[in-house]
Image (tube, rainbow, N blue to C red; front, side, top):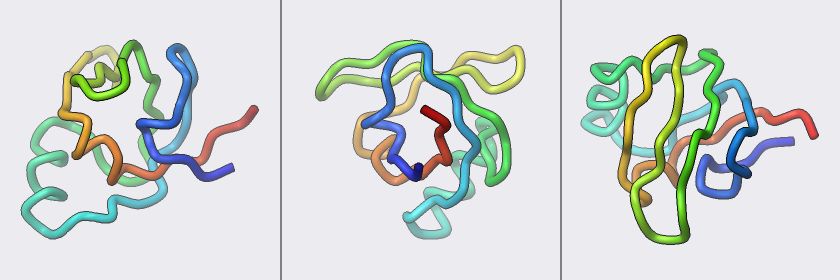
Length: 76
């Protein structure tokens, strides 16, 4: 099932399938360590605030708008 990061439940994991933003967004996320095919776990996030994710052993917080452009394959 493909879902944007914003629609995932806290604690869910998935693999990044697509980043629907432009090159600037893709480069910024890559600099944070978030790239296509990586496994990502949603740690926390509310409706409009930042979302915290775990990539490997690193936790990062990204804005809600950016998170909505990250599409993941999630097994439910």
